[in-house]
Amino acid sequence: MLDAVVVGAGPNGLTAAVELARRGFSVAVFEARSTVGGGARTEELTLPGFRHDPCAAAHPLAINSPAFRALPLDRYGLQWLHAGLPMAHPALDGSAAVLSRSVGETAASLGPRDAGTYRRLVEPFLPHWDTLVRDFMSLPLTALPRDPVTLARFGLTGLPPSTWLMRRFHDEKAKTLLAGLVAHVMAPLGGLATSAIGLVFLLAAHARGWPVARGGSQAISDALTAHLTDLGGTVHTDYEVKRLDDLPPARAYVFDTSPTALARIAGFGRAYDGYRYGPGVFKIDYALDGPVPWTAPEARIAGTVQVGADCAEIGTALHDVSRAGRAPERPFLITVQPSVADPTRAPRGKHVFWAYGHVPSGWTGDLTDVIERQLERFAPGFRDRVLARATAGPPELAARNANYVGGDIASGAVSGLQTLLRPKLSLFPYATPHPAVFICSSATPPGPGVHGMSGHNAAKAVWRRLRQP
Image (cartoon, helix red, strand yellow):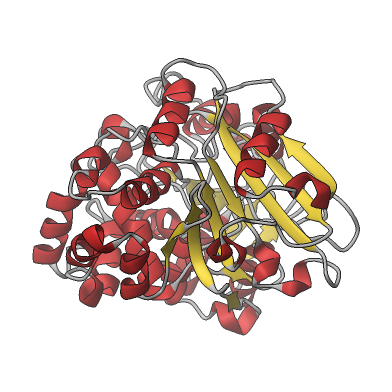
């Protein structure tokens, strides 16, 4: 009998398996698809030689993850590559707010009236970042805070809505930059703890940047898998689990799945009926004949580029999707240009690029023209660079990854109390109605992103059970 079986070979499932194997437990992972990866994969989606990331591409949370930093993933080929800037947010006038490794450079890009305010916001936390991110991403009840004072100060700043945080700033550049950061998790700007979301992205960039993985995000998943194999764990692909009886006997079962799938497989009935899924996304992967012709020079050297004219436009796009249930006319876009940092991702002189905008859950329309019209506002001539495109709306995303219910790449709405307490209102979020079954997906704290911390935290709950006589 195995000690633990993990269902789902995404970053969280693989991290949970590694953590258990490191402690001497026998572990097997079962993945429905033919390759490991979940939200961290790399595929040739458009043309030969163009390597795209179907989901996550830039990794501020991965490079800062306490779980990943404790593992020797570099020995298994994981190499972080940095663009000239972690992120840029261009304006229609050709200027840009930037998120740089340098606090001073970032502050200066926001203008003289807001530079000092920005410094006062981030500088108190940066000396304590490694401890803070460990405390922040380990909650709840998986570890005692190492620096409760800094964590409490972070909570006082981060728990209010981001609209409150924006009031500290005078000019549009700072407010727009923050609004875009919050919109990464498709959260309404006025929601609980949305200030914390923006702060985490800011601090992560200043601490270690927003890199890409050399060769593609698949390198993260492959490194975790290779480490697990060296520790004695096994991985089985092309193995779809429809019920618990499909799995071998084990003392514990750990699910890197949506709560909906877990309830169906484990026979938990309506245990997670209260769990809410958020908006979907419409994503386009591009093969380009050259770099994106951004008007703002800063955007040309940034790994990630946020696209939204101002705070009001971003807020309207989020409202249209989350509250009105319609696709926005001018969507807020998150774009990543991996080949700016990693030329191995495309043939010489060519580039890979992706962009996505938010749409209602399960939306079946085509947002291609709307997205490209939005890009043309900030990068005139963009369409002339397109060699090929691969589009994926909510149905296609959900078909590729069952955790993306309705196209929700956050695996659950990041709004209200569910921002902090997911998948249920519980002090033990990784436990389920069955004492031997656990959940470790992005539906559990600390939530979405490629960081492995949900798997890391869940593994602690599992090994406590396995150590019981």
